Image (cartoon, rainbow, N blue to C red; front, side, top):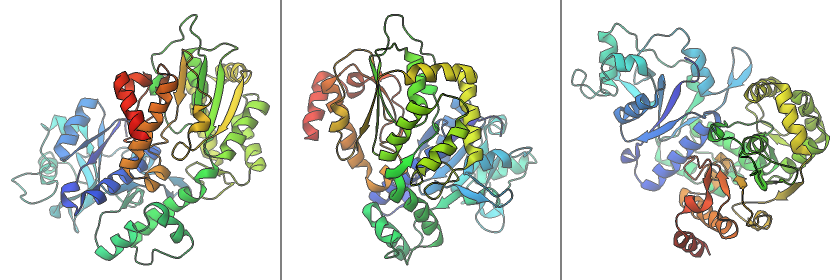
Length: 459
């Protein structure tokens, strides 16, 4: 795959599902799990053609189409013995490959069409060939017939996504009423019964694979620790510190180094307050240990010390499936990428040393259940920042809260924030995982009347 040039397209297949509630839940699972490993642009449409048009406009080289219920999962690559994910597997799979469209054949060959569950389209070839439609009169009734026919006319193969890629997509679409009813019964708190072996006997293999993945998150999330950033810094791009306008405070989740990047981008002085909040007590303890004892050098070696000190920590790393385990190769790779962003080890170390000297506060806070501990640390000071990452669209949040509930809690919380400091700058994503980077809370929520009505609605 050329660079990191992928567009993620989510295909709205709600019209083929029996009820809107199931469609909304499957959409959430697809979106949440896609964002677990993919930070590029995404779009959504009721047609493949619509997604491809949006993908072309993005300037990306490939479009990955995933239907509602297509859930990217990390899997064990038997070739090298390591965990990987759909996006990394596709990057390897496309090296040297020449095609217009690749996918999962519906039948023994592509004559039967391609499954809308997962498609990969080379956008350069797609445009060179005149943007053929997904369907075609040349192959009536065949899903993907237009792309297949265009491929054949151009002398291109229509390759199947093989065993090196296919395990990265879990198919949660309803196939059997009994198994889907069992799957539906585990949504939310029902996952706990499954973890105890008390439910789930009727699940099919794909549902069970997904539930086994969710189970780890559902059980261990409150002891979770994000040592690195699994999201990018693009929402900070182009911003520069303004002389005489150092941040008064930054409030952020205890994860990775984004708070440091926010401080570097917006500017700070020795009076800037740093408030870390998290619903994971261990994440806060790890952050305190880092601030108090780490000198900013050789993070992979320091991560080993963290793992020794906190054996019950659930490290949110691709290869970790049980508390206390680290994928050391991924830690090293992540650290290398981090230093590249900063312009080298010395630049990062200078920022770390300056930031760890600032006044710090550590606050245990569940934004869904009780946000008051965090709200109590806010004040109506100018030049403040609040970053919550994807707390309203994480896999754990999506599993336990339906979209309507997450939206209600999200707006109520931000209305409470705005009532204290209407000018605080926001970074994070909303309930649909759309970025809010660099927007003041009052502007995000609307006019003063809109903020007040939101606050009233949340009580």
